[in-house]
Length: 120
Image (cartoon, rainbow, N blue to C red; front, side, top):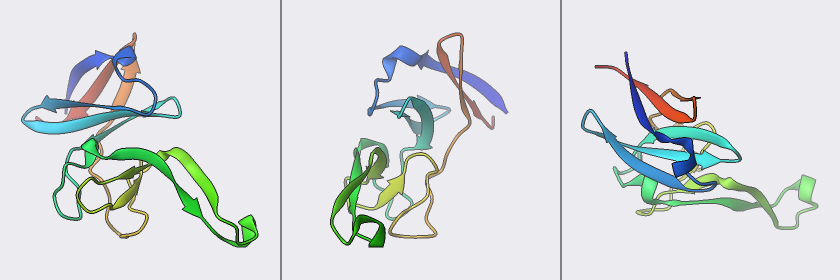
């Protein structure tokens, strides 16, 4: 594994994504609820540019909401711009198309810098 310094953590604002290329791989670096996540910019559903999608929430309706629509998980659901596949930004898991999952990469913050680990 090799470690690469991507950018200052301040370059990724809350609720946004910065796309970088590391070893020929397009990777989206997200900040959601104060945490950073790194995913390959390829939707596992149909190959779309997932990291250019919308990071938002979703509506739920269940016994817990007394069957009323309620906005849920604001800033934690990533929607693919091609077909609307939805993914949990905190885990990479597909919400509506299980068992699909985003390809993730280990990411850490060290001395204000975002660093990622990739196989050489």
